[in-house]
Length: 91
Image (tube, rainbow, N blue to C red):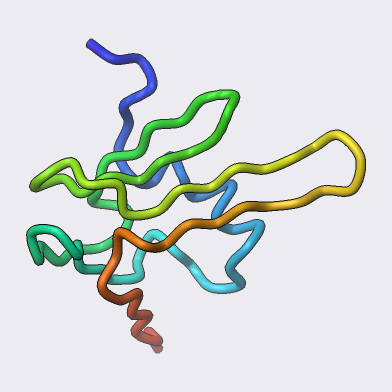
C-alpha cells in the first residue's frame, strides 16, 4: 500500500491556495483516456516534494503542484494532463 496515495480531496489544501473556488467539486477530463469526474474523485499523491492528482481510471497525471516555502512563496502548477477544468456554480 502506498501511504502517499489518497483520494483527490487530499489535494484540496494546496489547490485552495491557488484557486479561489472549491476545486474538489470542479469537473475535469483526462487527456489520455477521456474519463471525466470531479477532482475530488481522482487519486492524489501528496508528499513533501509536491502533490500529483492522477486519473482514477488510467493513472495519468492530471494536475501537478509544487509549492516553494523558503523565501517568497511560489507555486508551480502543471495542468497538461487535463482536457478541461469546469466549475458549476451551485446555488
